[in-house]
Length: 310
Ligand code: 13P
Ligand code: SF4
Image (cartoon, rainbow, N blue to C red; front, top):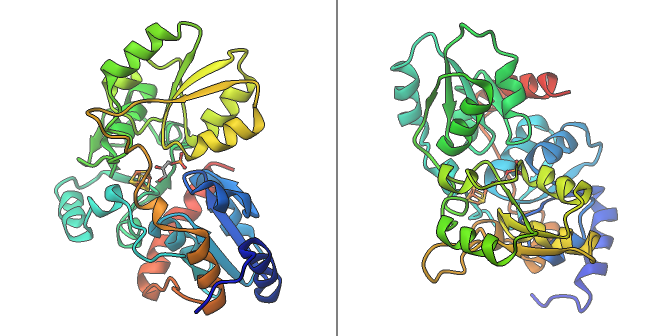
């Protein structure tokens, strides 16, 4: 079917017609960021999904994020512009294997990063995001052993920050693990005034050089508050669009990846396009659905997260 000339206007019309809210992660392409009702990191968007009174949630992010919105809103229609927008980290933690891992560590509390499937959430005690992981682990009694999954890089960072020994699942983000320590050090030498800021999903040799470590939103806020005028940013470059838009007088340099690859954009996030978002609203599909038993089991640790990071 042919697309309207003005997709932005057509999406606005559909939004009213459906009573829809458009939730957008910072790693989406700029056009999609521009039509967001709420733009944010994983925690901000989970909070919005938990409190919205819209009838339809259009989630411009990846599958586990839209699924999280559905866990919180069983009676709302949750649309994901491209159902194939998955996540290498979530896919790297299959529920059957995670069940065996959990069984091998009885008496452990299971803290799972929100970047996992609903089936893995259903086996968790508490969910966290990169914004609240340290704070949540700090609230757990010191003598309580903990499994942290699926990101070993965030897990190692949380372990360092809290002084806790965490049993880590061996997972990672394909985007955050490809930054080149060598090239970043080189860039820092070329830009001695620049601050280097990084997401905790990055590997330890990269984080070692960071002036500041935080979630996507925390990196954005840090760069707003800092007196520095130049930043080297190690996370998905979608956030650079917001940084440049809000701070035109500052310079933001995307941290380089290893090899010759200019591949810091998340290929899963970037499967969504403005056209697909429009079509999803027009067709009321593709829709996220979940077996009710899994949804109920996954809701408990999500609610615990929201209570613990109020
Ligand atoms: P945050 O939104 O918590 O920064 O997480 C980053 C990420 O990789 C989302 O997929
Ligand atoms: Fe998954 Fe990494 Fe992409 Fe986030 S950036 S959706 S963790 S692959």
